Length: 123
Image (cartoon, rainbow, N blue to C red):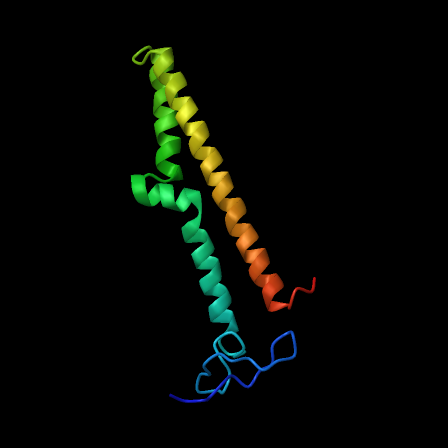
């Protein structure tokens, strides 16, 4: 087992104990890898959002929900669907929008946290 450790120091002044890459720095301290690491965090945040998980489970995205709402509105207007059916779909579409908004907020928060971490907590 190698005693090699990252060449960087942590915020508390102690040496980083992570395993170094070829550059001598660990993946978190290697400046050449920081952009890739930040991109990975962003992708992870987006994929963990409620909207992304809902789309994976249902296979339905925003465009499909919009088309369904439009078709339902047209069906209620023409009289081919009962108003109760339109109300039920409107309620479900409202829940979908809330999930999507919540997912976007989570993603934006994850990006802000990643930026703050890169800046060492400085604004």
